[in-house]
Length: 389
Image (cartoon, rainbow, N blue to C red; front, side, top):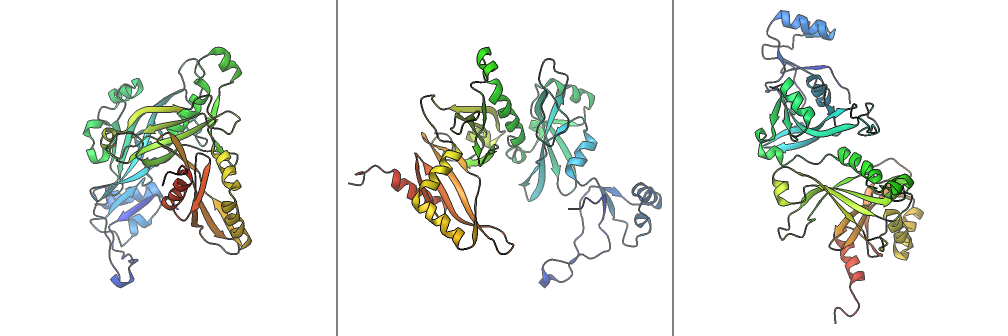
């Protein structure tokens, strides 16, 4: 999508409505953002700045027209606060019939002594060895207003920036509760923490030197499974409410079985209704317990004759079988593995369609049209013999 340098709204042009029955419907911008083009002098400056004479000579501009610039939210924030490192995955939220963009921001430094530098993700160019997810940025998608909320008041860097720019940052309590409910644990930040934990959780010097207990992201088809979000009732409380969490399955380095599962985010109703929880919970499996990883479960599914026959039949009928990302969900004292199966035509272009859902638990597997049906079929296989008598 093109990143246009500016927009002039409202103007005298008529936008064609996508609803053909509505005819030519004029849609005007009614926000407060942008620069009012109230004089020829301002028009001349804007025209010279953008090297575009249309701003000065356009007959579509009227007395209410405003010049909107820097509409890309990440570029907009970087102009305001270039000293903050931004997460590359802003997310929209809907609050009181308005859309806001939430952007995670980090205070970083490369000057922390005796610490190995890292980057937030593969696309990041600037390494650092100190970082805090200290700021949540909220951008009004309509008028472009930007608010910086401090969520980690103990960070010494953000304290310094607050003294340098006293009018820029706001306390978390100043944010609307409806906005705070949407603040989530950043996925890139969690992935970085897990990559570091995978190496540096080895406290014994000899073990660390040999890397004998090093971990890595669990793998599927030779690719690491990055942390993923889940909405699930994860705890044992009686509230039966869904929680929004981040999950990261970890395996021993170079092996396919699971060592542990790390969970972060909103684990209780209290934190779901307020700010998310900063803590990370690690569920480590006993050393004498062999817990299958995604690749092993995938092989187990392929060994099921019913599943194998169905997948082979689709291939023979000219369809391309696409197995989606496998997710792992803790269920009581077991793990539930879920993997969607899509079909795509090989002869023509088109979007893949969901065909079946694969599930597995306790080395039993099932295939059905939906998650609920697949889980019901799985429960029948897991039910002890004679339980119905």
